[in-house]
Length: 231
Image 1: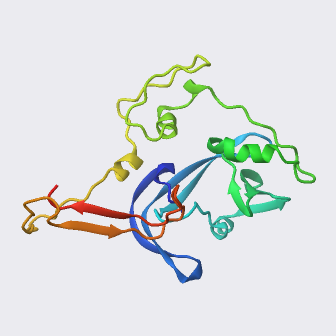
Image 2: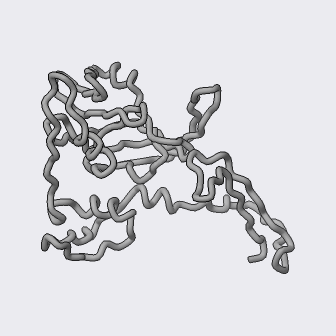
Image 3: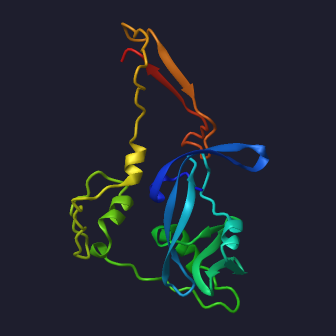
């Protein structure tokens, strides 16, 4: 489950409730598949697809169920602060403990995770970690750059210092994450709207958010909205 809609390969609306620690519950708004480009101990990468991933906007950080992995035949072997997950004897992903929690090491977050791995000694009887090489700009697809540049509506063909050019947008390109994120509610047919206001500040709609998982720059955990009916 994750709160980042941008990581989904495919996603569709899904309403449900997930129980969390302390007896609380979280609402799910979508479900789909996620691709993880995971770095392994030998420095190579492996593309893993996670299915039935829940989209939960209020979730603090992404979670993977170890029980589900074990039920599907995956095996976890740990040494030191590294856990390697394998299927039929083949490694598919590696996790690294950071701050007491295991995080999947991926190629798209190498500055935050790979540097931590490479600065530590490898666990006993495990091969040393080698920094992998990464493709140049033109070896990545347009979809890759669309996600990397924050789901921009347009990706200019900019030249980088290495002389490589970003790929052009395919004529049939669509992004399901963008479509879902920009979706709006429609007025049901036959719904009779009430009388609207005639001047500003005659009617104000207000809504207070739930507690946010990450504080703002001024350490606020809640926000409130005010919408003027007239404007």
